[in-house]
Length: 364
Ligand code: BMA
Image (tube, rainbow, N blue to C red; front, top):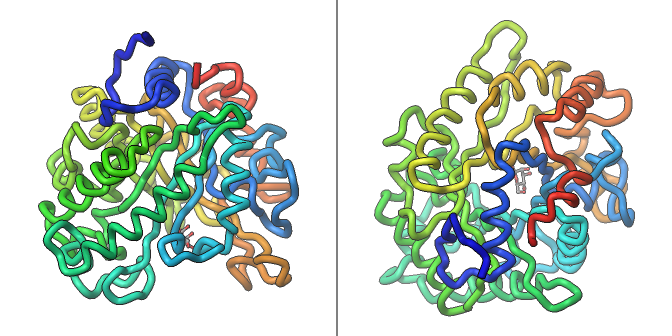
């Protein structure tokens, strides 16, 4: 039996999932896994080119973590809300896993009450879908579809590919129907616990690690206000983006450092894995952002991974950029003024990319 020093929230987690979780703790002193959303699917000026990757285009190595997004799957769509076909996504997930990488999945679910998207905060949606709510059955049906996708994620040998599942993120913001301005802590916790129990007990999915993921918070109490409890969470994380002009202030790195101090203290006390689940500076207009802001803010905090958000790209052969007319991106490529600075991050030895993650054998 594998020595399970760190217990997964799901006591029935598969052996590979337990190994991944414990290995992620073990390698904390070795560096931070570098992740990127939709990395294999598209980038500026390309989409769905076999083997191609935004991070590899930049530095010559794949990322160590691959993020994917399930929004619109609950509507039986063939493409997610960012127009990535779910069938292709499954292939990309298998490829990332085969390269020894870690898979994380988010879910910008549509508003179940209004039928509008995740950013529609009307309708008291959380109270409607939790147990006892008028739309609870509809939510169960949505989870059946999520479970269907997740249960297709298997290795060629038939084992389930472990996934860090990160639903209902940025709850301390005010822009999603599950955010703190439109649901109480009790409602949010009920939604989380129901989701956890339904996926693990009813659907018997044992290859998931659950990531709790607020956005802003200033102290431990705020971080924990919507926390569903140690029995329902494996990873403690938050999202934090750079906005504005950072050249004449130290706001980003100071706040990042402060929040990472809170996060790493709490996660250590509770034996959870700490991570920066989303970050970036759209188009990196401050070319030294990676070293002077991101790395400065991270400092010596031992966190498991840092995940950069998605680059733009062409939408399904239309010749349109995904963020038309802009060419928005978070990973610098080619002649981007921020490229050299990103390369400094790459060679800094603080981060783990695709080659090292393969050697680390996180699933063994
Ligand atoms: C957001 C933006 C959106 C996208 C969503 C889900 O942060 O990138 O354009 O639809 O994530 O991936």
